[in-house]
Image 1 (tube, helix red, strand yellow):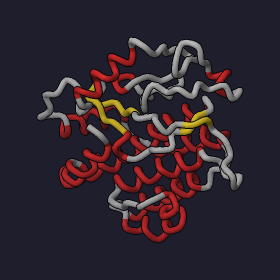
Image 2: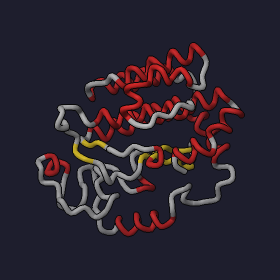
Image 3: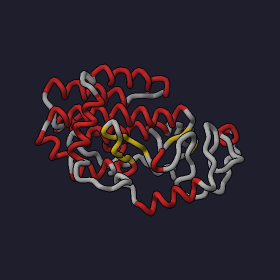
Image 4: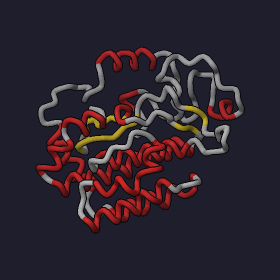
Length: 245
């Protein structure tokens, strides 16, 4: 199941059944997604397409697992022509998922950066909790360096005064109770494509694209231009069932 499907088909029901659970889960997703994209950034990559349909919620022994998929637009982390750090877009899109889980959807990175202070007043949360969420959002949107992310993750974690494992299990009971799919929402044709690719693409701690291209080579501008398909550009992560997590 994608995060988009969860938000469209299940989140409102979770709020009605247990608003506190919805709030806890939203905070957990915020922390988890930020942690995942930070792993990419530390390895020198940006996702560049962090839409809700590229975030998977997969049933697991711990209730559910969050994964980021479709790294077809991933690029080496760099400054763009205006000198802006491209990883900031990934972080802004993580914040967009957080606010959307609270019922406030922003159309774009530009929208959230320009209008968040006004729109977050509409979030489904109480006054004290809203102030805390505003503080975290403000910090995330004002990050200017990768070195600032760990302290933000610690700050988010400090507000998680609940058991994340129980939260995941409680949400999983609601959203996966009727699910019989072994792929947990991942299309079977995509899984077959993944299996086929695994026969041709080597993955290790440093390998991307093929057996001859390493992260060091990529960083040196020697990235092989021939990409097998949109799932191939994946450093130290893998394909669908073993994506960034």
